[in-house]
Image: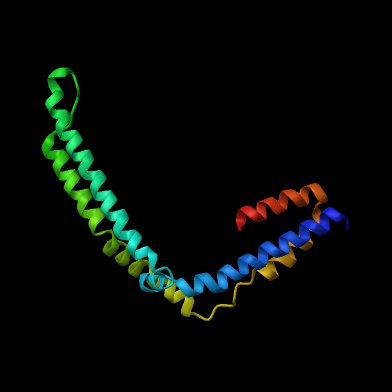
Length: 158
């Protein structure tokens, strides 16, 4: 086993240990519940208010701009029907204002299968076991250069 193979093996072990850490701690802690997410990241609630206000402001700005383009129709500028534009703008303003409730509904619907999977008695997924199998396959099938390519693919997988 050369130096390159040893380096590739060590980096692959560290990547798999990081993946194992992410799957056991972060995904298990957050899940599909927005209240848990807000407890871990309290700034997200303030950022939501800022982003929602920014979205409404941009939609209103676009609405006013498109309505003023109607005054330039005689100058050869094309514009949309003001009624359709107003309906679409109001719809998107409502979607931006109620996006928090929409996300909570989606997480409630999507969280049900997630809870079923988390509550079932499945064997734990350990990337460390996958790492040992992967290193055996790399060691048997590949030389140093191919092992480096495999390591790059493992980084992409991570």
